[in-house]
Image (cartoon, rainbow, N blue to C red; front, side, top):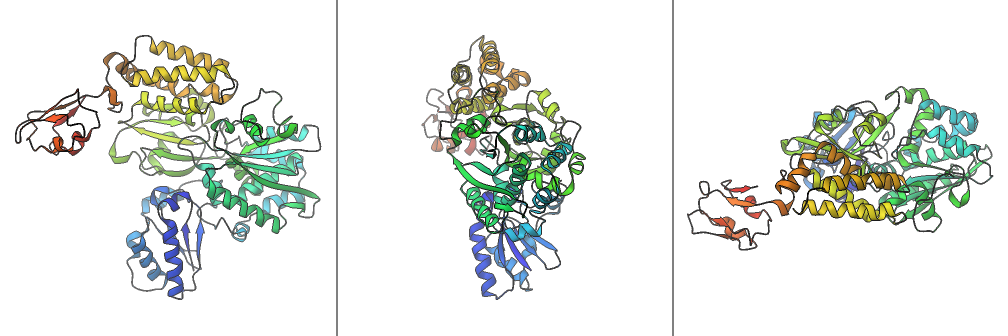
Amino acid sequence: MRITVGKGSCGIAAGALEIFELLKSGASEKQLDCPVTATGCVGMCYLEPIVNIIEDDGFVRTYVKVNAEAAGEILKSAAGEQNRAEEYAIADEDAAGLKSQSRVALKNCGIINPESIDEYLAQDGYAAARKCIGEMTPERVIEEVKISGIGGRGGAGFPTWFKWNAARASAGEKKYVICNADEGDPGAFMDRALIEGDPHAVIEGMLIAAYAIGSDEGVVYVRAEYPLAIERLEKAIGQAKERGFLGKNIFGGGFSFNLRIKAGAGAFVCGEETALIASLEGERGMPRLKPPFPAQKGFWGKPSNINNVETYANIPWIMRNGGAAFSAMGTESSKGTKVFALTGKIAKGGLVEAPMGGSIREVIFGVGGGIKDGKAFKAVQMGGPSGGCIPAELSDTLIDYRALAETGAIMGSGGMVVMDETTCMVDMARFFLDFTCRESCGKCVHCRIGTRRMLEIMERICDGKGADGDIEQLTGLADEIKNGALCALGQTAPNPVLTTLRYFKNEYEDHIYRKKCTAHACKALLSYEIDAERCTGCTLCARKCPADAISGERKLPHKIDMNKCIKCGKCAEVCRFDAVAID
């Protein structure tokens, strides 16, 4: 028997470190022959901290939202004592949601100890690399990746085999394999969870890619804001070197490969491959014109292959099970599975891995549990700041690169920011545009100045100062930026505005012409009024108002002075009689 505690970033934030220590010290006090070890995030972030008791026969008992009291009961259960641990057992619905997923990239996350290479080896770890290096030619490896149909999981879905083949075909003895772990989209945390939960899978995937293209050196470019991911990756690299999976003459086949980590400073633009290369070389992270592509002239001018974390994490599974097995999942144009990060107004936030070809609705209302607090589903932002808002009426759209592109959004790295009826789509578009404007590297005028001009218009609209012609000006600027920006990040920066204009134009018109925010999210457009028939004169609102804007006699209807009101909403929040109307 053993006990595992989810110690991904989400688990730690929920208190997993304390639970881990309580269980470890408690097991020692009870003299249990029961090791307490860590795992990564299993994906159910909304249930953290998560603890498993794993019996010798493999039977697993899962406990969720574990606190100090629950830890004590779990220890009693492990000791065979009378206990109340079942009160903290995972609900059947949540357990079924996890089992219903098709886990390829997330296969080991939440299952194995990410700091133990032995546990990875017990899950057939490095067997795929051994097979490739010992039994297959580089060309055969690339062919198997081609058969799988896997596209890059970082955004565009470009065929992975094509990149590998181009790098292999490029002249030069020195070549590089680079992992893009610069995950910068708001609401995206797939790469972080993969590295924290299964770092050896990423290493093995890079090792196979290196053999395929003829590289002896690799770099993982990971943002410095991911300290736990960096720590676990460093340990995994050290363990792989000790076991001979990295270094010289790997598996006795004469092939050598070394790997190191580069911590990035957190610039969103460094998610673009040429900007990432510039940063690796010690330059400011700014995109370069293509061609030449990195496969021909990349890091230090040498042929370089760049894929993201999830792409590499899929490769060992593909090589163990065959490309055809991976290709059997998904659609004609989008093969395999995809990991999504569910955030926003979702009931069950976390990670989901689903086959391509399912619908957005199935993800949000299936494993995601629908919308928080029973509110109505309004839209989902897919593809991060470079993506777009997909309205509820299009939620049956298939998770497929082509199908999503037709809506104006993109697959992106896999973030799904869910919005409900209380979300103002104008303000949401302003938020994403503000992000891309701040993160612009400034190299090209269209992105540097164009996004700033768009943002100024969006801010005016949200402040109640929108004017006739603003919508047309936003559309014109968006077209100029899309056609003139140097890199894909600049070219897609207007997407949140364009998609919200496409599907929620009425909200823009309400802001501009009626000076109203129907979602009651834009403060400048709100007004508060007390309903005299409902108000009992309890004075609670007046006492809680920080601006002293409410007056009235006790037991008589009160009034709000809108000249003093700062629109904080405190009056509506504290009123027990629903007497405060917001317009």
